[in-house]
Image (cartoon, rainbow, N blue to C red; front, top):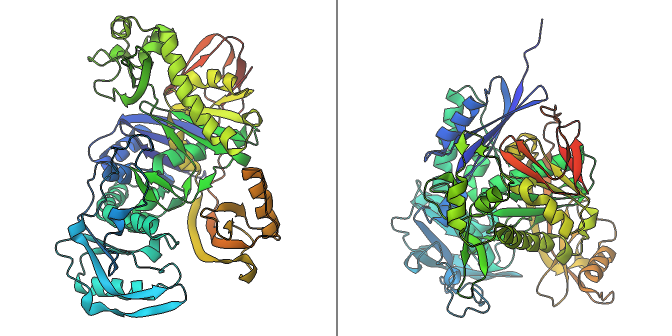
Length: 583
């Protein structure tokens, strides 16, 4: 009897398009559909467009949490802290929003002051200082979610557990999140900010994810796995319970896909370069795997959760081109978006990077989907602005981003390949590689939908952190796998070092490499240990659809992206369909 072929589906929702990748017997099929106001509708439309049948694994990347946070469309949230610390979210860190613009304001907290409450009771680093008095816990009013963050709960969560249990007893329909559940680390403000964001997003994200799971079941698809900011996937229930973990869901999928492409092409180290319509994301991939950090800011708010170490700049194909008061050319961060889009789309949009590329002959006359580009409109929009100068300006912005993740962190970019993807990434990659003396540029066959391919290949991952904040010499045996946050006693910030036998020596070496000096005689403090339970993703194989052998200058039209090969560059596709370009 002939066995039925099974398929793996990945669907990534973007602001303009929803991308689908179906891996069926080693053959990759792709599709793009417009993103609908109800994201679950566009996810299913993309699955239908790619012909998803006999799917055994369905992974999903979503912007639902990111959009809700940036647009402030989350739940009505209350905040509970220790009595006297109700202002924690509003006091923040005492740093300026911008170093040189003294009037710049921080984004407002997610919870207004009138919904910030205190409860009597206090824990210190060595135990209870004041008993918890639940009778002082005030009414939370009409809040739909509550974030609870008490002092030293990263070390002793007993008070937080009692407060959470009482809130859930009083308000059974309200979503309650405790800081020790989502971010059990020291530094109260970052922990409180993360917990508040998690509570704020939970009702919105849970409604969407459960609606998607129901719709997928009705369509004959398995329940989706959701891409986490850390680059792994988790179940719908896990993502819905703590949606702050999916704030970088879509870009994380692209990083995973870039690492897969680099490893399969035989490059040990790579840099992911994802240039879309509005922004560019770059990420270092040492060993072909994404670098991770313990947290990042999203919408101006610190989120203390593991995330791929992305650096984002407001430079994309749709970035608007203007002149400032001094006559200098500026590109971005404002974007023409999808509507009206670049001037060459013929819908009345302004001058953009896409218009400059069209006038330089680096775009075809017609884009995939039948969009005919209006060259005359691009010329009118740019007027007296030299298209070459536009490309130089936008490349300089992206070059700075690439230097941030490589040179500024002690890595020589010449040791890395550049993986170019996104709709505009392959247009600019070779020029950026020349500036950094990078010898190889990899353009995946699925460059326009690589985030969805990363979803297909993603590991299942559950990150854990245990806080210590005590001398390393006093800590017993640690896990064999994972990372440790370490610092010299008295320092304010940590270095992250892989767990190993002689952890102290490894930290001294890391400090020497990063700062140029070490102090072997000084006491080391262990701040936290980070581990992850990882179930490897499917072992996928790729088949070539189109083969290229190219000598620059040349223009290649790919599925969902366009590649410009400058003079002095050449290359051909490998067995996976990746175009490997070299100088």
